[in-house]
Length: 122
Image 1 (tube, rainbow, N blue to C red):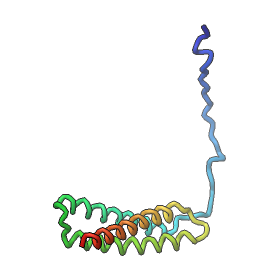
Image 2: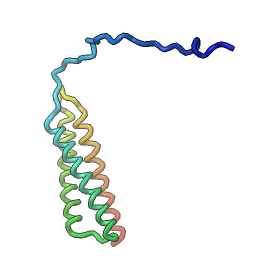
Image 3: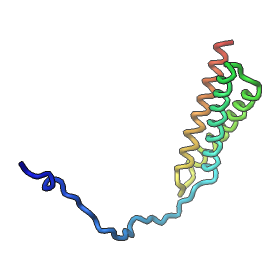
Image 4: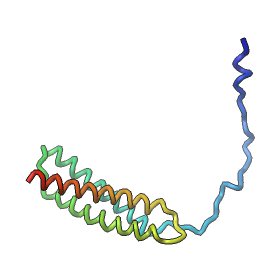
């Protein structure tokens, strides 16, 4: 029976500085994209908290929760526009515009869902 040590060998690489890992670029994070991501985080958080607090109150939404969702919906539309505008800029890192577009799209879809749900009950 062959020994297990012969089949599995442990390869240890010598730690050498790797100079080709650094990438120097002129790209920057766009201000509109960062603002879009921030507005998306605020919108999603406000809507989530409004739904959680309404659930904890037995399904009775207070006026403050509705106002927070309305403000979050406005923020999400503005954030979505900013994210799309910043996505068309040149020489940028696209992480913040993409995050902003995704979060704000989720918030807009959730707002539409809440409106349809509210109209269906009434």
